[in-house]
Length: 73
Image 1 (cartoon, rainbow, N blue to C red):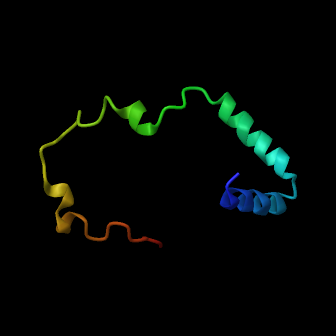
Image 2: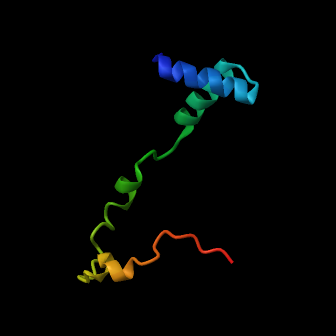
């Protein structure tokens, strides 16, 4: 096991107060039980480019004003 992964597992085991083997076992079981483990891109691949609007204004600076700012009241 790579040292950085071992270090992470050790830290996570301490945080959860659980044995490393239990955390590893749960991760392996979860991976084994995953159904249809496709990536998001693979699952939505048929939609990519399907709804092109031919409008270029979505990247114009005036339409991005305030984008990402947090609005709290």
